[in-house]
Image (tube, rainbow, N blue to C red; front, top):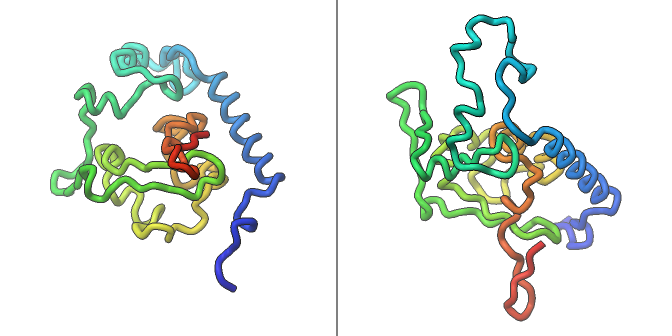
Length: 194
């Protein structure tokens, strides 16, 4: 029972429709949420009667000084890190060793199994500047290419794999081109982007 044929790997129309609907719902939710940051006393998370609330910095005061983004919490965290605007703590205990990767080790990963969409180039360096390798490997992603079972867009949209952070603390899944960023080559040498 060898591998599956290209025809068997194609997204069936019903599943494709489900994926389109899931993305449309996510975009609608994102558009409804996007806008200016609410003061903590009005965000629905903090108790406005709490007298200690005045000791906390409101999001507009803190986040407006960081590089802007077009979605999510409206902050481009990678640019903020590159510009030295933030210096995240990469460990709690001083003896914890954290390795920040350069562009050569390991290289970015090119994910080609994206149906008709542009391929995904996963940037290891930017992720390792914010997270230790053990945050994702080996429990969420296997280090060996192609060894992570069930890794697909449906699972990501349901909060698994990339969806653990993206949509929660990193840019939302509605920003398709942030991940699907590598044009697919077509015959004749030209690149085709979707």
